[in-house]
Length: 306
Image (cartoon, rainbow, N blue to C red; front, side, top):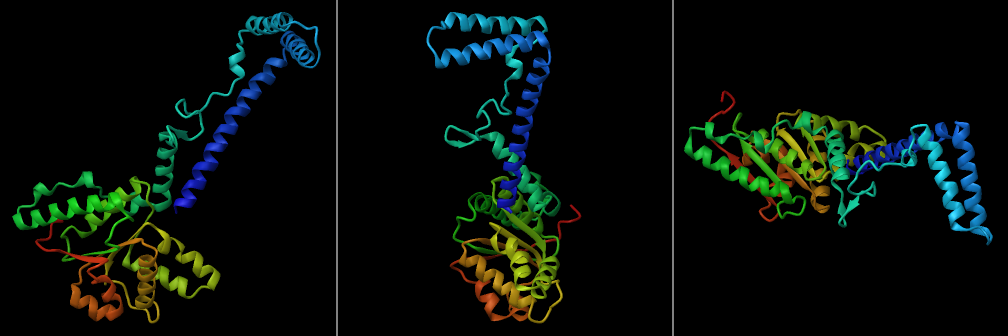
C-alpha cells in the first residue's frame, strides 16, 4: 500500500511539474509569435552564441541586444520572468527535500494518498481526538479505557517498532473495542504507516478467494494482508468457518506477519477459552504468547447508547 501511495505521489508531482513547465514554454511560444519580439530574441540569441565561440564581441554588445529584447517584451506588457517555471513548492523548489528531510509538501500529499489507498477514513472513522471518556459513569470502566487509550496511542506512534506484535481486544458488545482499534489505525496512517482494516467476515472471504485462486493470483490477493504495517481484524469470531481456510489462513497470516515484524490488532467478543475452542491451540499459542502478544479485556457496560 505504501508503495502504491508513493508511486501515485511521484507520478502526480511529476505530472504537475511537467505541466507547469509546459505552460511556461507555451507563454514563450506565444510571445515569440509577435514579430518584434521574435526579431529581438533571435538577434540576442545569435549574438550570445557568437560571443561564446569567437573573440571580438564585447559583453556590452551582448547586453545591449538583451536590453533590446527586454524592451520589445515590455512594449507588449510582457516580462522575461513570465517564461520561467515557478516551483510548485517555494520551500523545497520541488526537490521534495528540505533540511535533509522530506518536505512537508511531499509528506502531506503522501499521507493523503496513503489514506485513500488504505480506505482508512471509511474503514476506521473514529480517531483519538473523537474520544470522550468523561461520558462513562463506571469508574473502573473509565480508568481501564483511559489506560488502554494512553497505551495504544504510544503503541500506534511507534509501530511496527514495538515488542507486542499481536494485540487482542476482548470484551462484550459496545465496550469500545472497535472504536479504539479505529483510532489506532487512523493514527498509524497519519504517521505514514500502512494499515489494512477489515472485518473478520471480510478477512475470511478474502482468504477464501485467495485459497481458490491460482498461485500467482493468491500472492497478489494476500500481499496487503501480509505486508501492511498494521493489520486490523475487527469482530473475530462472527465469521463462518470454511474448511481449510478460516483457521489455516489466519494462522498463516499471523505467522508470516510476526516473522516479518509487523503488527496485528484483533477485536473479538470471545474470551481466551472461546478462542481456544473455535481456532485451536496453534492460533491461541500465538495470540496468548506473553512475549509478543497481549490480550486486553474490555469489561463494563455497553456504551453505544452514550
